[in-house]
Image (tube, rainbow, N blue to C red):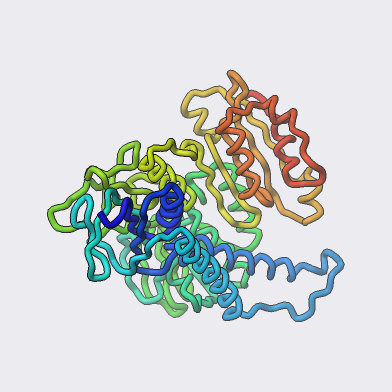
Length: 455
């Protein structure tokens, strides 16, 4: 065998797994037809967060006078913003390449085709391995909407090219994480933004109160939100494109803009991956796996966005990849996969882990729920933060922490401490014994624990 493990895909599921495999003594190669880092690093998480950071700082400068500061002739340079974003991406990509070199991981450039459970073809050569790990990720989905193929209908990939896309108006189809983050970026830069969402609310997979609060903030900032909408089609108009839809009351509506962003999710990228006659069990193109992340082909594993029914988050892919290679090395998986933090990088940030109050109620689990609003938090007042909260869900029987939902500054950092508490069985008394420094955003966690009442 040429290798102990060949990983197909160099995104967060693939390159992290490869680094851990090499550290565990497995001779490892990674096949990647594009740039190292995959969608997350090149066309997803990192460039989006760079743009959100730049747009956020611009927004702060616009209101600097409220702090007694003077910022004359405030503006933004869109190409310079893109250069900053690209610099972040290039630095991170170089870090992955350096890690491969340091750990003696072989990078095979090219598109992989799986020929057998132990053999692949890539870059004009054939390689063998004891095991294969599929981490090919996903690509933006295009829903079957009339007009979806018109010029000017964009995906997140189109907005995250090295040069980006400057727009004066934008209609976003989809109010999930991708949709609301791009709405935040473009609205902060003065773009007219409308979100059209089929579900009854934004971020439908998250806590209802988070969705309601975000909708109110968006309205205050000038983002139009049409939730509960049924899209009829997309058609050309004088402004550029019009999204024609029926609102939640059944009335005919249209939203016109220079461009339309299709942000309705991502689909697994597995087309053409397997040779003819080698047909793993799939669900709508995504690979079905067992509890060990092994596909229906023995010795071939899959993690991340390529897996059927998986939660499409970079850290989920990484954790799954780490679990697979540790098992291949005869060691237990070091990371728990049951409590998954979800993060949204709007302003304020949003984060969630464990069960929500609604989910507990649906499951018939009595709970104690505690909530602290950021209006009572000194650090939030100092930084002029808008509405937000920290909500904690405890199981009533033993007051164990089983869920947390945050919409507040630094929520995406604070959630890690709450995941730590959940996976280690912390209860309400444990949080109440914790001394939180003052003034900090983290104080809201202690205040929420104090406020917990039976629901």
